[in-house]
Image (tube, rainbow, N blue to C red):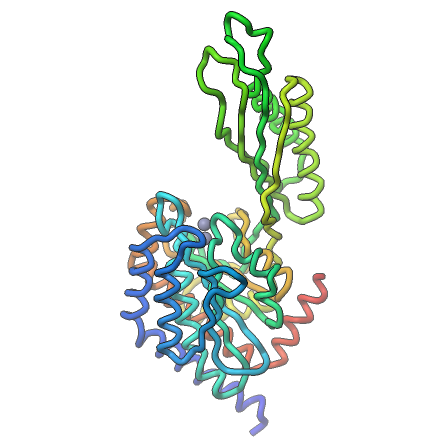
Length: 398
Ligand SMILES: [Zn+2]
Ligand SMILES: [Zn+2]
């Protein structure tokens, strides 16, 4: 029998074994997911989640390095050795007030489940499976920091699955950066001496007006949105200080650079008009756009469909946010598919989605995500030619 054919047969058997292994751990996995959900920890404070996740990996034969990249709640679990090196990424931070309304408890649990279910494959074919714990996705772009500190160097492939209201093999993520703005004016009695004041709030409102005008003439997928965090103290005082936070997003890095400059010009114009002094700071972390590796995405899609889900290759809703997975995808061929755990009308980052993340549909999503990830690992390790194709696509896109 030609060896390629034999490897394929083995791959099918390994897939069946991975599915059985994940089903056999169903109770343990759903308990792990529930525990993380009922102990929500904010970005970079995910101490309990990391203890439980790394505990599960160690119990199942992984070696674990915790606190990598100078981040106490980042970790790397590894099993096997040599090439290819395939990483499954885990997120486990919660949102302020809303808890696990982004379902990261499911991401984390599916990642460790898929890692453990890939062990037999590494034993059979060689290669390394990593589960990389990436903290602080929601607030600080943990993966962007880890990417700068070399956490993803030497990987051949990176993948994670995010819960959502649809099954898609790819995701659109925009490049983005946060901007903090302050205006400094001069306080005065708003009725008695208005001519003596410099109104920092008006400068902020002018900025919003200028940005609203700009928004009519920017490219389709670009986004500019912001809030006012300080608008003055009392209605009878000319506001001496105003502050706001904005996010600027664009489909690619060069358009983001252009847009950033145009947005700053809106603030400079408002400062000139009002006489208030402007200060601004761009966020330390810049999110890169997501590069979807379609070879990988198609492979994942086939595996997830084999579990009985209908999976879109591209997102039919054509919606887009941003994620630090974008930064990983600039370095390593990556996928960030979505798995449906809630009805189409549910909103991510809402209390309804937090409930979905512990529902029966949430558990099914966790298990299917883990299975499809493990099956994709099997395809890649059993067929080195696919890894080559994935890498060729990545190089072509650079
Ligand atoms: Zn989120
Ligand atoms: Zn999320």
